[in-house]
Image (cartoon, rainbow, N blue to C red; front, top):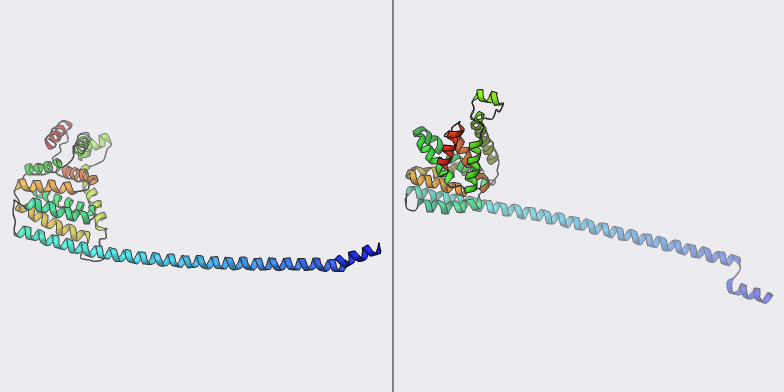
Length: 289
């Protein structure tokens, strides 16, 4: 029995030794935990550094992309200014060396180039201004020529667009023509003439805000004034029939969503649409056939 106890003590030590072993194991486990925590902290620091580096790289890339985009925009703007100036110069040559045989083909060719680079709103504004001037000038001379002008615009619309405008004109309540007595009776206080002028005014303000370049000499107003000016000069030099073809051509180049608006505005402001439903049906048939 004593031999067994001695052997047991020799193999495993006394109680103090066992406690010492447990304490050492606990200390060693704490050390391992600390080391693991330190490793985790190091990993987190590395991860944060990597994230910060990635953020800085992305920020730098965005800044470079923005600079490249600004440079490209500036280059495109400069190209657009140069092309527009060249086309205006060519228009002036066409005015100085006017030829009835080639003028419409020339205008169509130049408008194709212009409409590929200019915002459609700016081109719409140019045509709207030109048509307003033309309508007013024709109204001073002869109402018959105003009707010819409107008819030329209507002829450039698709069948669906013509049908849309026809229906709108025929279905307008009589009170919309500005008769105050009728408005009081129907309680419909819409006035198509003042509302159309207001719509054009709002459109002009929107177009004026369109920024084309940093150059103060190349604004939407500048384009409308110069392009509208050369087109007007050419129309004056043309015969009445040829000028009507020009106006019809201009409508073709207006954005599809704006064509009916453009023609409807000119139709209303021409004051050739009568108040009575019966007379309106007659004028609609005349304009669209």
